[in-house]
Image 1 (cartoon, helix red, strand yellow):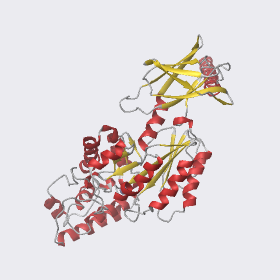
Image 2 (cartoon, protein in one colour; image 1 turned 180 degrees about the vertical axis):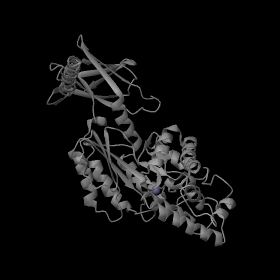
Image 3 (cartoon, helix red, strand yellow; image 1 turned 135 degrees about the vertical axis):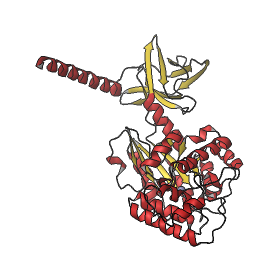
Image 4 (cartoon, helix red, strand yellow; image 1 turned 90 degrees about the horizontal axis):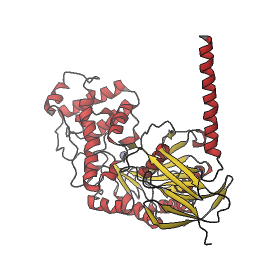
Length: 452
Ligand SMILES: [Zn+2]
């Protein structure tokens, strides 16, 4: 028995050494033909996504034109119930009167809390929406008894109020927010991502299953109907929630959430996190920062600088209001200065939508690259088991070349007549070229350009 254990241990340690060797080889292979997928598109040092929440009109009329002038794409999480032509918020469940009547004799408890918190916004009572938001806030802080008591207080008011019309409930609404689907279609054609921030912007954590799913799924259906499936990839659940129940449901509906995206290789520092991104040893760090009205421009610029110092940071900026409309608004002049600063750093940062960065990272982690050098040609293949309909962001490959090559020509097997000359660059490991491919699309052939 002892001999067997000893042998197994030996096998494990031999495997360990082999694995170590394989790891070193992949990182330090100086052999010509050696090919890696760069950490970020274009071999940049970091990525930045500029995102906005709540579908505030000035996001589109003030911030968007500034980004367009600079050629920077943004991600806009919109409240679809605000947009003409979409399905509106509604309560799904037992008759309202039945539930309201019950509240007079049965205290709020874990069994009825979600149903009551779902209905409250649709009761037509004056502060109905605020009660959902506040109950959700208490609940997410773990103050369950307080949340139940607040719902009891709310229904006491419902029972004694003159109830008003409850058509078109939208939380945190601004009458100015009149952007149409047609306008959103234009914005996607400019390269921006328009994505879901629910139908009515409720505290999803205190909705029951059917009402939570309606907020998530109907918002997705409307975006799919008016903008197409490409824009149903990422979403942001309101109030930056990380409630585990909400995350479980939402991640079944959306492949990516700005709230939380559990991946073993990704560290997520949310907006309130005090941890420094440089302290993380994960392969990628999603570092969210949300500038408020009084956040200094120097601090905002320092986030960009910090991202460039490391090589694993994805800085996700979260804006809300602009020019006086929306939560914690920034002025257009501020955004002009800040985005101009980011633009100046574009040699080092890849500025892309939230969806595109997510896709790039997943494509990189899920792709297999093979390359062979034979008869003075390097043949490179990239395969991935991700859905090619969804994961279509070009990844950047870096291939080391024989030292003797003076220039390199790239051809793709799908289009052999299209020859692209690549400029040769140098790093500590040798001469290399950079080029982009979509995983699984075609074979790449690199040859020396001899006519120079
Ligand atoms: Zn929001």
